[in-house]
Length: 402
Image (cartoon, rainbow, N blue to C red; front, side):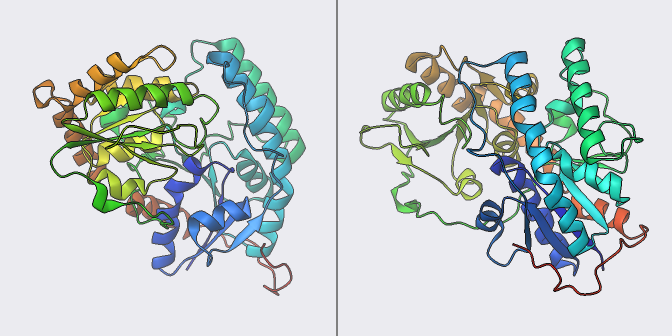
């Protein structure tokens, strides 16, 4: 049996796809540990998870809400991902010493995992939780691309092997991408060891108290969610969504996720919750309104649910374009859409004659055929088994995980 160390940033959307993979590996008898933000990983993976703590930026990811496009991209890397890598590197080193992994599985944006593993001579695999960077979003912005490569080269000099080459966001050993060809389109992949496994659909720890009995069986159900990283920008949009859903209230029931508690009193018949058990709820809704977060989009499509997408920034415009091109949803402008336009968009994807549901169901079938967590675990085991075992501590108690 092999040992796998999962290195993740403090971002829920980047951790969730790996939860099912870790569970699948553990179910096969392999050992799994995590490196990252202990409290968050434990909350998501459960109290039994083995977690090695890493230092984290104070205050998490907080960005000026007006940032978009290249400015948002540069802010994200310069102010969050690069400092995060410098902070996490000592913890990743300590985790490798204590756990002795055969393979390090590192999120595409937790580049400390890739660079430290590279320096330590441990095979590493990239976990790509979004399809956006698979299509080289900087191809049309060569100056931004060169700027990022300069930052990564400097980072490699500090925490990795200065003599190594290659982009740490794309491991030469393998890239496990939680998407599928039917959504990605015909774009060329980074290399031949890029595996499109579809979304990672697996049971998650559910700490919610969702009122299932409040769901109305006589109306269509529409879930509205902007994820957990957009509290600074979402109040106006959620308010317009509530108004739109109220206007459709005779035939549509809205379920609105409001983690920041920004909505006040809402009309009767609309459920507002700070958190929902999304995977289970997707089996019971007819459409999803979201910001284009890759996990929410792929999980919705896996369940055959069409989408209304209002991208805000980062990879979301690219993901929204992929959904529209695939015929599985419509796009609205996050900053300008009003209740009338949003209501019309919801009605469009709910209308069976528009073909959005059929397209979503077709993508869902292709996602399920890709294998998800089972295929991801297969590829990781393939890499671990021929690999030379990493040096392991003789006393497993010499450094306890956090």
